[in-house]
Length: 303
Image 1 (spheres, rainbow, N blue to C red):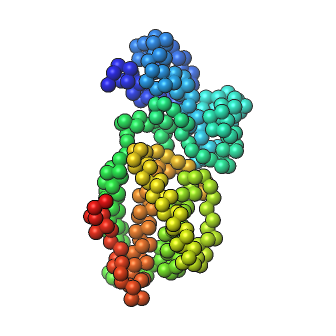
Image 2 (cartoon, rainbow, N blue to C red):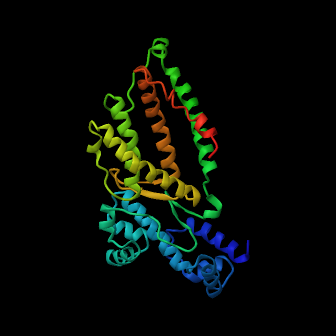
Image 3 (tube, rainbow, N blue to C red):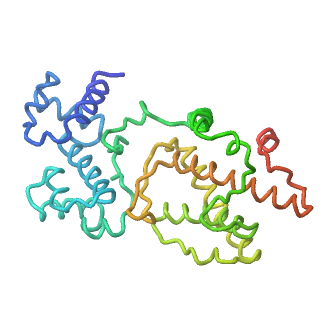
């Protein structure tokens, strides 16, 4: 790395721990890195594509946007935390960056990250992310999912010690959701799960009523649209190495912030259970073409 790149990385590390230090003069910040303000501003601008003050203001606005959708704090409190002395000044700056007032954006949130040449953004819940340092790859995600599997299995064995022998040996009859499940409802939820996340990533509503005793014709039609769309999202974030990027799920009450990698892991985990139930139910009706739906042979096939 060059001196400028090293200094920029150190500046990002410093800023992550000093976001609430609104009083430090620009000259003092530059002095901490043993540069004059002129040389420091020029160096950071060269690497980041924006001067340090603008860089900091952008990150604070991204954090403010995160606070707006994940807390019920008054907008004035969010404004003060972001370093603005008035509601009006914060509203002007926020509207320029996000194309909507803070109040409107809170009701209908969009993408948290403001476009920036450096690719460094506020990373919930309270840090900054240098893409080159903290990149999550598809292999990392796969490893993390296996780690989660091993951990969760161990936790299940641990808490199973609370059961007596009769409870341990009792046949299991459970449904994955609140209501009794059928082949129809499980298939509708499998398609709907992809549709729901497609809607969340596009910041639009999802029509849950479509899953009420949905016909197979409707299922085929929706899957033809939602399946490729969802797969396209996943391919894009994997190819662009954005698995650790965040997006707002406005369908939640209140709205929540997720990473793309976390969303993929969530979908695969819960879909696997629903798929297994469908495969076993089909087999119980004499339809055994799919077996258990095991992905092992699918993954082993050449692309």
